[in-house]
Image (cartoon, rainbow, N blue to C red; front, side, top):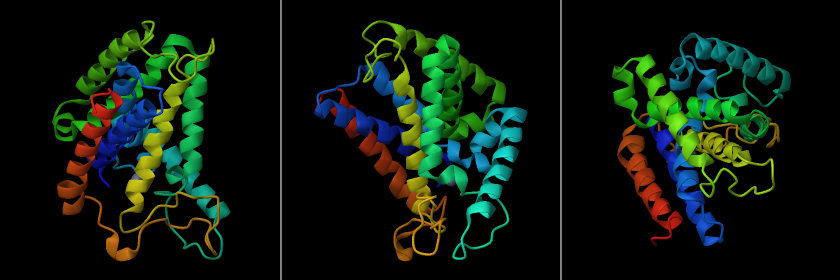
Length: 263
Ligand SMILES: [Zn+2]
């Protein structure tokens, strides 16, 4: 899928988690619902850091371009080192290491560890990166015509404001994990969810997605998970734009109302 569909599905997924949490008796304070949805929308672009044309690889100028090259090389090396007889040969790292459940969990756990040990600046940094991505993903066309610097400014100001809102007592810095010292531990959750939702979105497209790696399926360790071939679509096709994106918006809206206890 393309950036906007990935971001919308990420936001909808977190709002759905919000509805489930409310139903289970752990309702999210509204800032957790809103910030989590934005983080998840941004994190749902992150696995494409292995592709130089992807939104995330151009979102932070030379920093993300360099990181993209490193991640692509690392992914390709891991693919070559772990492929079995059944896995095809390939020429680059796109849709391999960063498109697995293990990568999602590692990145989310890393963000959580950073958030609880790094203090306010770590929380701000995590928010900044994901707000920039959320702006790029959700406001696709608008962000493309404006300059990178404007998007970074928007990301920085929203990160600053949201960090202040979350920090007020009762607003959810300690949502779900309430012991002292566990503030902002939950920040990793929308990051894991965003990456997994991205992988599921890619699995619906023609080439599938090796979500399960390193768990082998049959003779393949990089088994491309996906529905039967006739049910798959091409990235950027009308199914994605005219069917999936409206469905994600609708589901997100219903999830949001459920999470806030309206329905
Ligand atoms: Zn992808």
